[in-house]
Length: 194
Image (cartoon, rainbow, N blue to C red; front, side, top):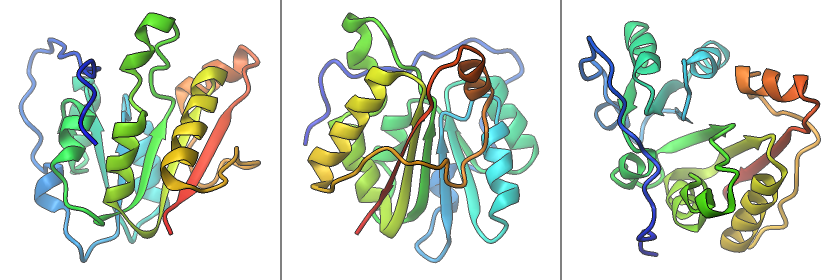
């Protein structure tokens, strides 16, 4: 599948005192490790939580928010700054055991929905990266994005996937807290590669 021509969700932001991370993603990933990838971790709270929860795994992250990159870099958590799709396109197949995409920007306006991070193209890459039995966990409080994501996963995996009744092992993020205060429903999709 070729990348959609309209796809470009990454926006570089100015941030003083920013240097490339010490431990980049591509340098640390190997087929011998248990790798967890947190895509779009914001300030890094979710990645730090996953790092504590899975001490036997190597937790890594991808983010476009430079202060978040800096926070995790100080903790020696391997991170990559930039467009998530451009980064995961370059990673080796079947190297990741868990991938988390928690509360990505829903781009609510109809004309902006093409910018959503999870689409046919990106899910195909995510599926390629997962090891057999690997987990992809997607969470949103946007009902339209939730059903769109479910349909993407169903279509490309040919699995009868539906919303989970539990949160799995994912952390509670600040975006989830905001959504709960607004009384939004939280939608979790847990996909295991067979």
